Length: 351
Image (cartoon, rainbow, N blue to C red; front, side, top):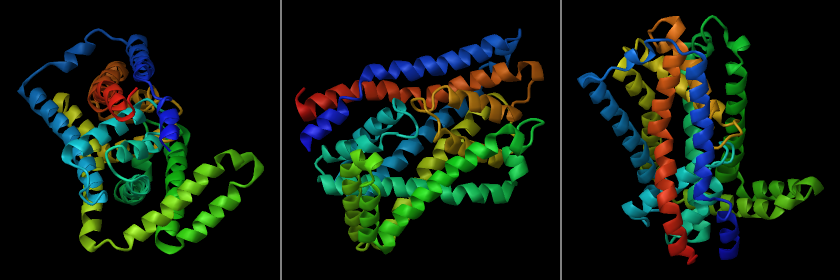
């Protein structure tokens, strides 16, 4: 198992952080250059209000990470200290930032938790449950936002309706993938874990999928272990796990609300919040590390309606806001992870 962990971790290199940075800055730079108008930077004057809302932005990011830390301590039954929880979350976020959004840091998170003194089986269970609660948040919040706001308003961009903009199709694809995953995992966790493992092994005995058979065996074992653990959990456990999940993800989405308020007034905070939820679902199917490039593009396309400036300047201003957004929510994890990861690797593996 240790050798397998070494082989997996060799795929992650701190220098990989340069690629998403180049992609993201390149996309933003191109958007600003192609639509640059004199007076663009006049919309970013600094005042006490600007300072206040930027501080609130940072506090929302702390809320995001603090929610993650609370949850992983709850899922580990208090076995992880606050420092260990912080380290695991930072490594996890770093890995997610340098791998495509569809892959994320989940495969590596088991190693990070295990190397903090948790058994492999327990670590796998923690990561699986983390993924379960994350998907549960999206499955609940997405239809709720559609119900409260309306599909036409939520998905429309400028003069385009939901269908012609293409956003609706991408969002539904991402949501469908999340829903399918949650239903399968829920069946295994709460109804028939051994039956799900049996089905997984049957599927991955098919010749084209046989190369992932060993991974399917481990996944089946993880589901059985997690199911047994969940049956012993009380009501307080579920309250803490769900509440910390909602704290983390909701804090993440309110970041853009705070950034917008630093420079402009916002008329509909709920709609802005909901569109960020949709953006995150769309980023699930993006092939670049951390959704880099696509995130900035979607920000400009999907949130520009909230920017009260001259239409000639809207794209440039949106690109600048997208850059601020990524500097707060994405790039810090690249830097922190690049500092922590090599030291952690040397300490845990001696190389």
